[in-house]
Length: 158
Image (cartoon, rainbow, N blue to C red; front, side, top):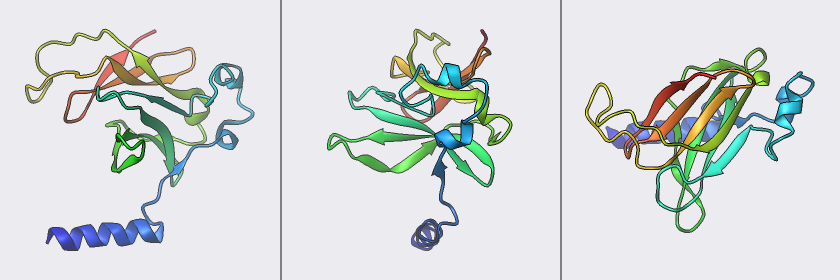
């Protein structure tokens, strides 16, 4: 059964039915927040840094599909090649036309101390001192930290 499901997923990916595309400069061009975007060489559309504490850079990037936007994280390997599995941050999808022009992604160093366990199950909160910040220019942000199994979301206010 697992082989059948894996085969179906591969067929969908190969056909493009499940393909995500990177958000590009063209998707955010002409918006008033371009002055903020200019402060980043990637226009805050992607960011790299060690998110899982293994000493190898990982990448967080905005991806789009069917007019919706999410953030995808690809973990690096010792060979500097991305692993096959890409993790989507546990966030709602944002609208490409109305939300995305005001949003950015960055890798930030944090000193987040949430406690000894995360809800609903007791797990370490973070194994890396770096997290993915998904933010709206001149507003609040969501911080995603890797706990060894999944990303944990923390809301940050400005």
